Length: 109
Image 1 (tube, rainbow, N blue to C red):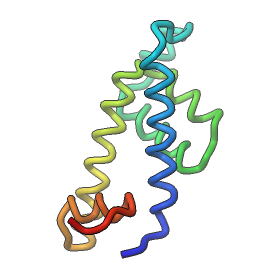
Image 2 (image 1 turned 45 degrees about the vertical axis):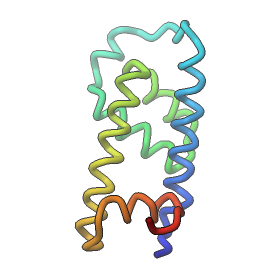
Image 3 (image 1 turned 30 degrees about the vertical axis):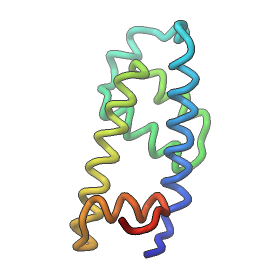
């Protein structure tokens, strides 16, 4: 099944991989005002981050990434991905596994 979101979803995962690689190899995350970190929870950060990735807005990506730690952002993005796949699976009356594979352009299992 072809979807118009396949390219966007793939792009989001590419950005997440680059983000994780950048912070996974560095012990210095950079100075972030602690007031900004407390202003947003990890789910707000994940939603803003993924939306910015889908729209290819680097300034908003960087802003959302600074709201929480890289680990918290990763957890939030993972939770968002799980919820999105479940919602799409319900809409399509398909299994989450089938939907996830379709979104990533993988052959059916």
